[in-house]
Structure formats: structure tokens, C-alpha cells
Length: 627
Image (tube, rainbow, N blue to C red; front, side, top):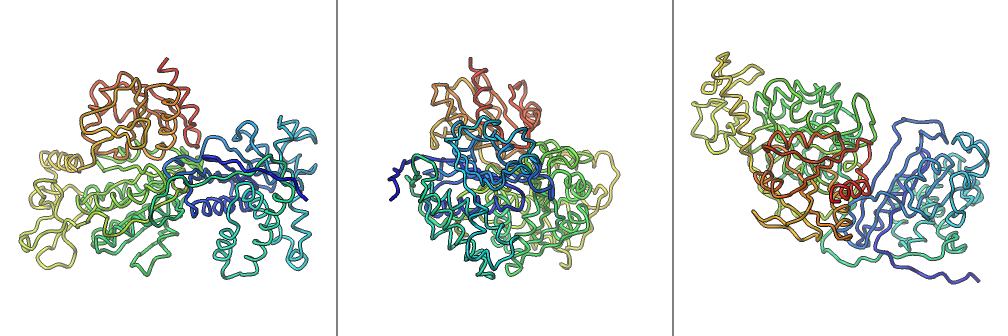
């Protein structure tokens, strides 16, 4: 008879799965987050891939990790967390490299079969006492010979050893699911769906998972209690666990359907943007056309052709690809064609950190082209917000006849959240800005709407709307090539003013309560305003909450619309005695705000580590300012 173990109720928990690339840590994290989302928990995830395509097994550079934050309310799981409460380390290298992400007294689950002398040597341990060497309390460790236990199972006798070892992640997941009382049937359903074409593989994985679950239950896994994270606030609707890249793809498809257009993506595979191409390629039945071009400029140029032909045209890449696309992007500016350019930022410069995320392309997408070349820029704030941001980018491109940059990043692109599926009827209408019938036989390609300055687009092949576009400057009236200095100055100003006139929502300022949002012209009186943009919203909001809980008066202004800026941004920053801009670069947003707001001189908090801004780091920096 086993000793009774009691259950503790928690508000949230962070679990980090780590092991070699190929150990299935991303799948384990995905299953854990999915079954948590199904029962209504809030989730936020952080896949942490190594940059090596295939590092030597057991090496320090080959560790892959997946961090999952689950909470009792979808409104509170805003970040994957700075540090984890539970670490799964499948080998010695994973333990050594991932321990720094653990909270004090975190529970650590290890496969002892991968901590032999050779494993310790690869991980550069100096002694056999690896726990003592790292200063780990043995009471915090759940040590289990996972590999030996799996190899002793019946299916292992008739299955190739290499395939058997691929199920180790399911044993570890079983222990974690026991620890947090996750529904075992949900895991089994997930595996049967994932391996529907290979039912034997599914059943083997389920059997290993069940053994891991029973191991925790029968041994109590050296922990004082199991834990429950109940859903305290239900939000009606249909939800799915979605990554930022998939949400981006869905936003593009929704926009194409709403506009009644075919969706065309011209792309070239590049980390971390490739999943957008992969996802859209699955949806030919919805009229989606995907082309994997031979290089980045060809991908962008093909999308420009699709835009000229009347499709909803998109091209996707990351920072290095933006450099290569810039000449074609500039052609889209000159021709004033609707084109959505997706930049999923990664660490740089050069090849940089391909599997990590940063915010270091902001000035590149604003200015990284020759000549006066303005483009609207929008930066989604979370994995789930990628859907809305992609939809807005498409709507802006089509209605204002301009290229638009969607500035995502590797953190939110690969991260995931619980996303409520929208209804198509609730999405804003999208209307192409086409030349009216009255212009037939009188059409000039640069005739503009006097209110928005968007030019009227005509589709090729329409009698009476024949025209030519190209990379040379055009006459504002006739559309013919023009070298006239005054005309060039006029066209540059018109293109800039057209972008400046694009309507974006007024900027909000938030305080410590999720629904405490100020009205127009009214801003809370606090001692410090935090400012950020894009995918760091969760980090900044969580830091603000922590500061408010300690009695500090702090507010947050988080920008989603970068160009044009909301009209009240200047009024907001001038309202506060101290403003600190926090970003994953060395001050690019701060520089952009200084350019646009006379006399603005913010404080700055900057990190360029290829990881989300550390919440504790933001808090410490804010306290120094406030004290």
C-alpha cells in the first residue's frame, strides 16, 4: 500500500522540458500545453531550439528545450516565465545548460541512464557527483532510469532499439502529467491523432506514457504533493493552442476570404519564418497559392507580380531575407502596390542566432531601402495577436494600395497561446481600392483618393484601364516616366503622406488591472511609464503588475502600430515625469520615438540576448529609476 499524497492548488506553474535535439522535447511540451488548453487553462510557450542542425548527441550545444507556462486564467498566462518550477533533463548536458532557468528548489526530473561517465564527460562535468557539482539539493530530484524501464517493456522486444528510445519523452511526460493531474485520456487522444497513419507507434507511445504516469503515482516521485491548476475564469468560445506563425497564416487566409481574393505567398525557406510557408502550402483547397522561389528577391518579385495581377500578395522572411528583398520591396513602394511583407525577426547580425528571437530589425524595416521609401509597420504583441496583426496588414495593404511590413519575431512566432477562434462575420470588411467605372478610358495609375491619397488600382487586362508601372519615377498626372525634380519631390511627399494618413487606433495606457484602460486624453498619474513594442507585451505587463504589487506607481504604453504612430503617443509620453523604453535591441524604438516627438529623451532598458526580456531585469531597472 502506498502512502497517501495530498494535492496542492496552484495559480500557475512553469515546466521546462530539455534534452537532445531528437529527444522529442518540443512534442512533449506541445502535448502538455495542448491538454492544459483543452481544460481551459491559460498557456504560453517558448520553444528553445539549438542553432546547430544536428549537434553531437549529449553535447552542450545540442540541447533543445520547450518551456510551458500554464495558469488558471487565459488572461494571466502572458509569458512563458523567466524561471521554471519543474525541469525535465533527459541527459547530463541538458541538466548542466538548463539549470540556470530553474527557480530555487525547483523539481528536477532526470533520466539517470544518461548520466554515465561518457555522458558526464561530454557535458564537461569534472566529477561523478554531478548534483553536488551544480549545487543541486538531492531532495529536489526525481531520478528515474527511464531508458532501462522502457527497454524492458514488451513492445521493445520486437521494435528496433532506435525507435524504442524515441519514446523516452513520453515517459517523462507521464511523470509530469501525474504531478499536475492532467487527463491521461487527452494525451492518448492527441497521440492517436498525431500518429493516425501509424497506429502501432501511437499505442507504443501511449503505453510508455502510461508507465511514466504509473511511476509517478506508485513512487510518489519523491515529491511532497501533486498539484492542480483549475480554471477559475471561463471564457466561452472555441479555442485551440496556436503558434504565432500558424496564427499569421490563418490571418492571411481570413483576409483573403473576406476580400474575395486568392492568396499568393512567394517565399524562400528561412528560420524562423518557414512555418508560415509550410502552413499555407497545406491549404490549396482554399485557393492559397504558394511558391518556394530560388532566392529571396525572386520570392518578393513574384509576390509583386501577384499584387499587380489582383491577388492578396504576401512574402515572408526574417532579417537576413529583408536585406535581400529590399530592392524588390522598394519597387513595390514606387509602384504603390498592395504587398504584405512578413519579417519574423531573429538574432543578428549576419546569420546570427537563427533559432532565437530579437527586435533588432525595426530600423531596417523603417529605413532599410534607398530613397524616401515609407511603409506602414505593425508589430503583433503575442502569438495569438499574430492573427489580428496579419489581418490588419492585409486590410491596410489592399485599401491603401501600399506595401506593409508585419514585424513579428522568433519568440512569438514559435511560441503559442490559447486562441479563441473568431467568427468571419465579426471581422472587419476589406475592400480593394480599385478604379471606379467612371475612370474607364480616362485612367491614370497615380490618380488618388483625395481623402486617403491611396492611388486607384486597376487590374491588367481590363479594357480602358491599360497602364504601365515600373521602377522609374512617374508623372503624378499622366503616369509617364518623369525626371522632373519638382514632380519627384511631390511624389515623395505624396507617398509619405499617404502612409501618415493611414488610420490606426489611438494608443492605450494600461495600469495594473487588466481592464483598467484610460479614455481619450486621460492618462493615469504614475511615477513611471514603461514603453515597449511587439512581442514583449507579456514581459512588460507582468513586470508592471509586480511593481504595482510592491506599491510602485507604474503604467505601460505598448505599441503595436509603429508607422504611422498613433496620434496621441506624444501627448502620452509628455504626461509622465519618467519614461523608460524597454526593447530587445540597443535602442531602436527609443530612436524612432525621439525622431517623431520633439524633445523626447527617454530612459532605456535594453537586452540583446536572443531571449525575451527578463521580467526580473525590467523590475530591477524600474526600481533604480523610481528610487
